[in-house]
Image 1 (cartoon, rainbow, N blue to C red):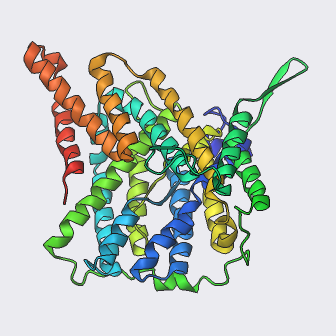
Image 2 (cartoon, rainbow, N blue to C red; image 1 turned 135 degrees about the horizontal axis):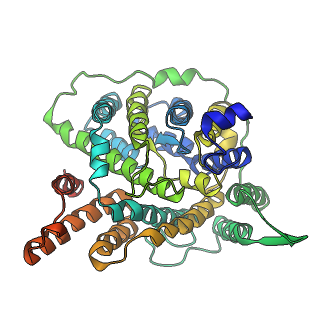
Image 3 (spheres, helix red, strand yellow; image 1 turned 45 degrees about the vertical axis):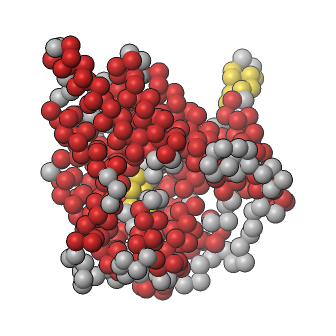
Length: 442
């Protein structure tokens, strides 16, 4: 125990071994859906679905373990949502074979790797306005809450009305939300000491899943274990550079690259803010290591038949449960490795059980707003970032709009008032111009 404590600085960061274990398990529970979603999206490309599922579990476990050992942060990684849908659409439309599409993922990952090694990505974070770096946690919180409400069915996917409460899955989600709220805030006083529930997110997921067994929402698999790992060979190392060098692929390469960049940037800063790890300038110490692990994951993922591997915002659920070190990521990686053998069991956790967790975590992440400067000049870009995240359902686009609006507002203030101190730095202006590529339609 002492060696673990010293290696991961558990006590130093105000955590305990128990909290790290619960946090790591909670993170896995909230992102386990990627095991089935990734395989489902790739099913239309001609790839071996079982192979994709096994590869997803294997690589998510390996890269998350790398994050634990190298960066010592409670951040988990897996194939990112968005990139997988784009790749599936590209292949379905006949624009490329799935082997060629995977090569684009590998190339974008190599670009990330070079930028990370030369610390270009760190420089871009440093010139990002402090208010936005702090406020991005709230934007991610809204994104998670929106995702949770939509996935639970409590509201419609377009957020324009209530969901169908005659649906047993929606009823279960409502019960799950009630359970997690009660567990999160209940306090019991015994002999003058006040006790609270530890790991309410994970406990609520387990309880809700069990209740789902009696309502028919949770479906137990026919078999608990994966019968064979051989299908992994049908998707691993199948990328090819044959026919890849054509102009038609450049837009997709840019989309893959920019999508992962904005996603990792926002997630790292948001999780850092949630865990109170940001410094006085709103930077996350060691973010360069996060970027490097993320880049390695993207390259390795493409080689192993997966779309871009990125840092998951669902890691916030583990942080909420108390995780503060890489040991939580070790636990998450163990669950991913185990899911290779028990994939049918893990993916039987219903969305109705995990969606309320995302809602509650999203609400808690809004707490970072207490450290935001609410002066209209500095607050407006943060507000626009949050609104864009909610209404566009894209926190990467929200971050981009936040930076762009900051540059425009401060340029106008500086030029019109003649006060050069209000002008954004050259680095911030360049970052704003790069962010504009997020809104270019290819």
